[in-house]
Length: 216
Image (cartoon, rainbow, N blue to C red; front, side, top):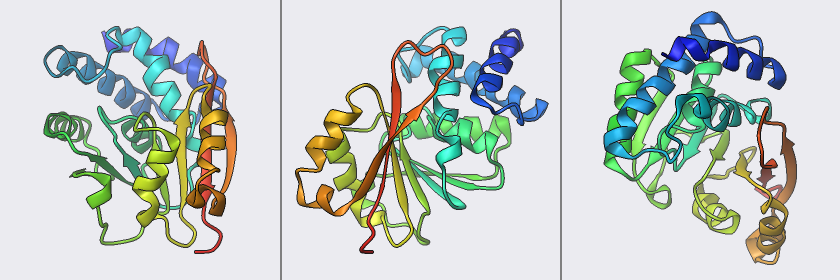
């Protein structure tokens, strides 16, 4: 079934300017969707049920921030079903990804994903982000649907060292959330910008709020 979606995936990758993915990587992306659809019946991992819809809503949406990643160590906070971390890890095998989530059922699913897809550049951590203390600094922190921008920024503040950037994927509320965060002391210290994300076939505008702290 997943192979039937290859034309849709290929067209979306071309529209994203990411036609560089190998045939193996493309099949891994579709195999991930197949696992997600299968486990979703029991684990309720995503409200999107149809694999065809998952191509755009999950795979292409996640990969839209790929050009904005920085560094070799990427942390995906509140990864849920592995989004955006799993698609990014498939597309970027030279980078190391840490996928963080507090729910055991999600980590159980992701362990199976890593096993079936043979992904060796991903580490899974079951923890709250406020309690997470990595052994080595991360270069980039991403989140797709974790919390409001202000709450996310507060939760990851202890992880943003010198040179670390954060990317929060947002919808049309991005500008309003950024304005609200800038009213806080932490938000005023950050150097932040809104980056448009061009997701093929997306019905809703998508953005990433990117920031770092220049005084660290």
